Image (cartoon, rainbow, N blue to C red; front, side, top):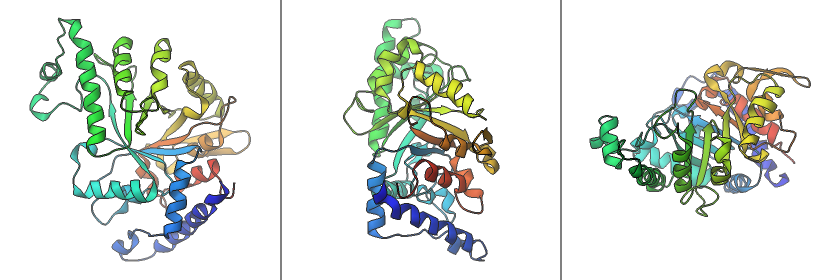
Amino acid sequence: MRKYIKIFGLLGVLFTVFQACENEPEALFLQKPFEMSDEYYENLRAYKKSKHPIACGWFKQWSGKGPNRVNYLDGLPDSLDLVFVGWGGWQNMDEARLKDMRHVQTKKGTRVLISSLITNIGVEFTPLEHNIDQASREKFWGWDNNNPSTFEAAIRKYANAICDSVYANDFDGYDLDYEPHWGGHGNLASYNDRMTILVEELGKRLGPASGTGKMLVIDGETLDPSIADKTTKYFDYFIHQSYQATTPSYLDTNGWGYAKKAKFRPDQYVPAVNYEKWETGGGNFTDSEHGKIPAILGFAYWNPADGTKGGVGALNIENDAKHEVNYKYVRQAIQIMNPAGK
């Protein structure tokens, strides 16, 4: 980690610059991107490739256009490892988004994944002319509710369409949002055998078993422990929506304990905060050593008893840019997990 000290030292300089810019009257000047040295970016990319607790987030405000840097992937912290784009962003790729994505991928080593909620067959990946209602979607995918023998082929076709979407614009992978007990139920999500088929097919082209370098992560809930032997091996990370966590014991039991049952390793477990509560860094978190602190910092300090966690994440990560220092708490969390000079 010592070789990356320059990165984090320069990030400290950026904090100061951001604060100094607060009093400047020209909005366009305020939002001007910073360009660092070639050596800085080389070290940054090397850091991203190293084994370390990651920082990641779901980014809703992506357009790649306008004077406000919060609309750009390039406006996110340089040391952010993964960013998940959904909510129509990846489905509406234009020149501006593509240019923005290529910049952070190639220059900063940031990995950009598409994200979608898995519920029913075809959701979010059905061509518009067939995306009229559930019946039209099922017909397109070859799914016949009266003939279960059609299900497997339809699921595999759907999985490959997801993979095709990743490869079409050279995204770095796919984030499978799985929440069957939190409103995300459906004719796929509510059935373990069908989810097993989906994950196995995705795993041929994405994730650690594929050998492609493309990532496959799951967030929300883990798949049922009864199918863990067939599914967990296909995922790089499980990102747990730990939005209710206020103490380390919650993460120990309701977070990591939950992931452990699904046979994830500690370094695959990534607790995430909800940045709808951006003012407090995702809510309040209390532990015996640090007292009451922002949740994302509490998650950064915490580790399971079994080993080092996989990192931390944030939903609505762009909200952290509302602080006087852009991405104030995300930057602090990264420093806690990966301190400069170590």
